[in-house]
Image (cartoon, rainbow, N blue to C red):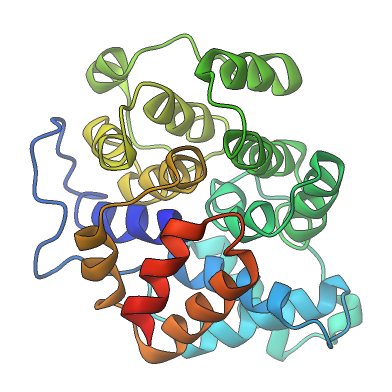
Length: 282
């Protein structure tokens, strides 16, 4: 989860000002969290509430709750229109909007971070995604990202990870980061964000390098880096302490509280990262 938030914050200043090299400051004064972080936190908050109704209407209420807390964080137009209707439509009748936008993959990391079974991962990713992104490509993008996170925690042969995604989901992961840097353009669909984010991870040498790869290809930089970061966290199991410190200090107290509580639940999956989360969110 923190990997996704780091990617979001680092990529936030490059989304509409693409920087097509790996040489850039990870954090500057203007670096900030966006809707990618808010929605990710909403999903984590939903997962943490063990005493609430597990149904999809309650998940929507969490997305609505966090949207209202942070309504100006560059949400997509369709999501904004959809979530605003929650005030007007009885939740039982609330319908998804058939989206295949990359928002389904960007917010999915808490699902994968909190479970280890691949069957449960695919089922829960579908459940969480279909409240809004019920298009087949929207669900596919979320499931592919979540399953890569689950696999990456244990499987360290990147060729095996790549083959799983290609065979299971049919994504083309044959491009290189250098090739993408030359041709990739802004795109908000799962079809043209999830494979690219995975390539940026596959080619990386460590967590920071994965984030730099993602920003360097351009496009929807914050979401690309968010998805890439969520996978890189699971695979490398280590994030430089200064990066976590710089990230956490840009987060408000209520987001830090969810972050702390979530890593209390998943610390066995991410022991080194959890230790740093606790240090900087207390």
